[in-house]
Length: 142
Image 1 (cartoon, helix red, strand yellow):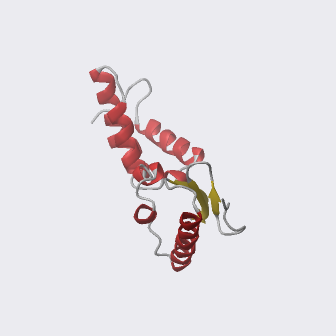
Image 2 (cartoon, rainbow, N blue to C red; image 1 turned 60 degrees about the horizontal axis):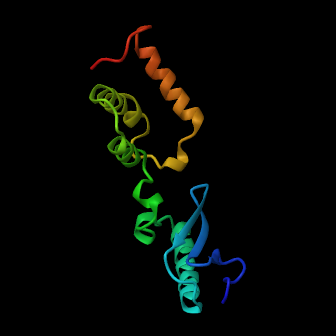
């Protein structure tokens, strides 16, 4: 069984194939749910050639090529936030407070920004800006 040619960004694992590439300053690693056969490895190598060409031309769409990837499903902050809020099991008032904070602070600050491009510094800055809008000891009201 082949492991993929060096430099192609394709790696055969036990039950799948992993592709690696750089996109917008972030290293992306995606596991393709396909058996690591010679034919599938060649197909993955062709896919990587296409991906690199599209990145170079600035027309690459992660979701189009890797629609089953968890990164594609929740790659943007607002989609991730909605999914996160949806899976929480909390008291109704607590959950409503979280939703309000998302609507008023976090969604305006980060919106549809890719998760990989949100740093601790940016989130701390948004949190500090939000706390300046509040009076000490008071929560944010609508």
